[in-house]
Image (cartoon, rainbow, N blue to C red):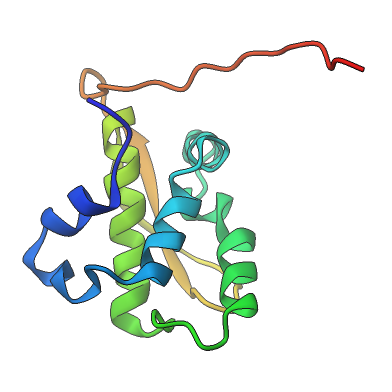
Amino acid sequence: MPKAQFDDFIKSSPMLQGIDGNKDAEKIFDILNEDAQIYGAILASENGKPALTASLKKISAYVAENPDSTFPMTGFNKQAIGKMQKFILQPFGYSPNGKQKTITDNIFSSVSCYGYEDGTATMRIKLTSEEISK
């Protein structure tokens, strides 16, 4: 199974049909779906922190740089971002563990914590290092 795709995310729930084709929603999905962001979300989860905290700076920067966004940070859209995080982390074996944490952020006030469910992963993060060529 390949990494999560925005089109599959939209198809995963009828309530998401309203953001189908929304380029700003897709960009936020793409931010969450970057390998570094997935790794950060997993690390946050392993350390008892909400998974979304790994991407808050990048999401906030995108929102600030796009004041005329077609995906404003309303209650529904913030919930959709949470659903994006869940959809993206699911193949890696992580899902919400029922715990929410209150945070200080200009967009979100509370976010979900995730836990690893043994035997559910279909993907993994693989880290590599390499020499910088000059």
